Length: 293
Image 1 (spheres, helix red, strand yellow):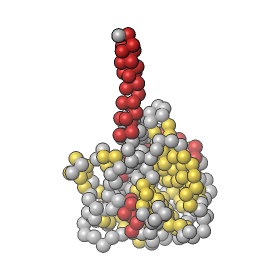
Image 2 (tube, one colour; image 1 turned 90 degrees about the horizontal axis):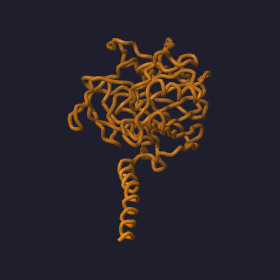
Image 3 (cartoon, one colour; image 1 turned 90 degrees about the vertical axis):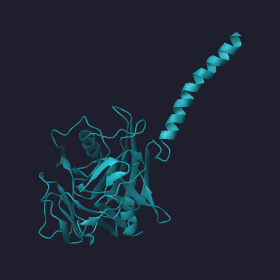
Image 4 (cartoon, one colour; image 1 turned 135 degrees about the vertical axis):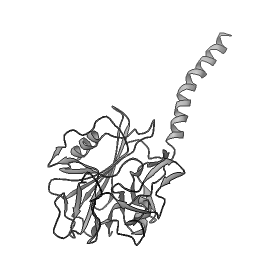
């Protein structure tokens, strides 16, 4: 009798961790394994997956890009011929695939937009949308940002891949705007929120502009990654070496994609649109990298 009780107790003891492990595997199904990774993806491009557990779970995906790499070009989503907006909404994967890019992340916030339920949302793919801030692609400025009450920071990219923040050139070649600056001249912007965690997307450069940092933080996924505050995101970029950095659109828009060996898009992070893990949101513009291998 005592032996039966001991066996029952032992099974009960083992059942708890096995159940928790099963729940975790179900939740994490299809997501990047939450272990640190650092590897070279392409010439001049290094990928790093950062995993933290305190003060909350956070999985960050980082691409460090040498802008001096030969045969490298950047692309902000070009204007579309569409009525009612500047662009047709498309996912980041669709953007990468359509333009034959090797790397892509989501861009600026946009309008119109809503997400009431998983079936009641806007935009769908090909719906007309317009970026919130100043936007240009290949010499054409197609969004002026004047409708936004709060002026957005802007990253300008020259024909020779020179990247500068908030210094508008006389002739704009490529430009993409964001929500707010995180780092200015090597210093974290004061009064950044350090309490609200969400999925985030950010872009930054080092002091001389040679190194470009693309960061996407997964979020809104219990037992996997809660997200990051603006302060945490800024500190992460500063630790990487960013001298200037800004936040792009976050939340369900945050997505990082690369081209796979077969040419198909591979999503590096775990996007979450309408609280559905793995679901990509169609967005307005994007930031892409083309590398002729």
